[in-house]
Length: 204
Ligand SMILES: C[S@@+](CC[C@H](N)C(=O)[O-])C[C@H]1O[C@@H](n2cnc3c(N)ncnc32)[C@H](O)[C@@H]1O
Image (cartoon, rainbow, N blue to C red; front, side):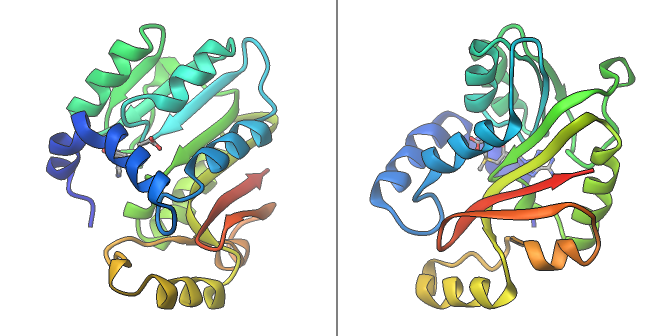
């Protein structure tokens, strides 16, 4: 269950902790840099492309995308996270909201990519499907929804990763299983990065 207070308290330490856990390897953050790189690659970005990051946290990807010339938008419900994102990326359009909420109407549509890294696992599966359906309508032609996270092709892969992770597995988090999303949505592909993570790509 998503607890915004937990993220408010974690904001200042999040980047350091994520980097440390990535360096330690394994579930959940091992492969994080590679996974984020794949999200950017699959987004096919170019100068001026409009990109939205759902659960943007302190704006790590927003900063890289803005540096690459993209017009960046971010949503997060943790005020402290957004404050860090605003400081890092002054040009970003930011909204304090639940990522399932409607976007500000002045943001319009026409996104080249709508991305989300290590955030959507706080949303249950039915809400994920409803959210992704809505997001697909906000993309420009050829655009993609890209979810980089602890994620799996199949339920069997997820169960194997859970067994390997043992006590470190977080039972409160609901990870994407591409086969299950594909039963509800068109255009779903999964790109594995590690045995416990990857990028779910959904194109309209
Ligand atoms: C683990 S951090 C990841 C931050 C960033 N995406 C990254 O990869 O560095 C998860 C972020 O998602 C946000 N988040 C999770 N569930 C959310 C929700 N339902 N609505 C808005 N933000 C949410 C949290 O507040 C937090 O900032």
